[in-house]
Length: 134
Image (cartoon, rainbow, N blue to C red; front, side, top):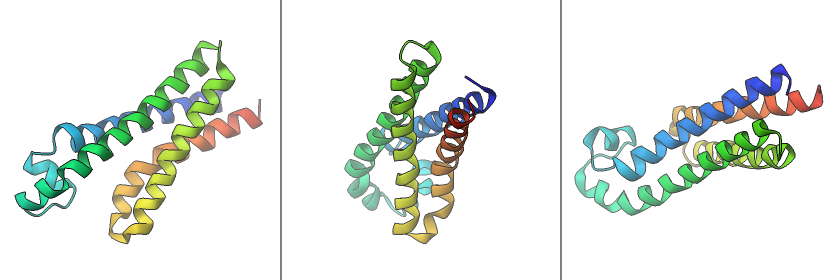
């Protein structure tokens, strides 16, 4: 793996960690007022209504993170490098597309979409560039 690929792997791990953090907020720490404020939830009644959706959505983020990490491990071990690359691209692409859906559904979510989508976008750019220049 060349230097561009290594930088891509670093950004892929960062993207996965961000999505694990989002999972923790949505699925494990939802009842905390600070978490609810992070997601713009104004009162406890709204938080309770949104709890099942947030819980479910958190697991989507966790599964994307696991996909990215499994793909990275497969790439780095070398035994299943092509499969790892494909899994990583799929997970990162899904993260990036989810960020685009977020911002297109509500322009006020631009900051959240950038947090969610910047690392996967950079990872994709570096990983693909690494393959193209290898």
